[in-house]
Length: 218
View (cartoon, rainbow, N blue to C red):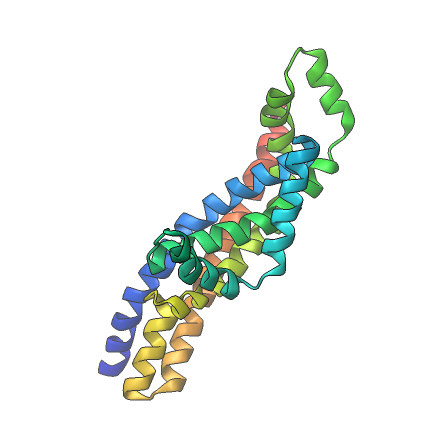
């Protein structure tokens, strides 16, 4: 019992850092994905090409490689980021690139009549995208976005590679000292399971709430 209490206490400090990483990177990644998804369709030839190149690179690189490039590569250009900042930037860029694909597909699924109606009301292209297209696209993209956030929770363990003291790093260091892998990594797996279950539950609530709001529309 004493060992279990000490184990949970030790892992809790790392869990807080993991939650911090996800709590910051998830909404930023969603915002970036929405922006990139919109620009890939409405950004014109130049911006659309830049976005497509950006997403092709970020989705083609493993997250760990992106993290290492940011942490070790940016100092070569005089940009110095700490381990946590490098991990956050990597999560935001990679998740934003993937989420942009979900948002792009959702935008393309929206009936063109919505755009025609917006123009008939005198809306500019920017107003049309912000107030008409993107809200609907984000609702349709929620299943894909929720999957990406859950993947982000699981992949957050890669932050240990650049020295972030998140929950996996703590458990790995703890196991090297006391060598109780079954107990330590079972507790670690349960922590990740709890985080993923919570994220899935929150996204289900969001989908249910959005359906209620849509049903209330005249």
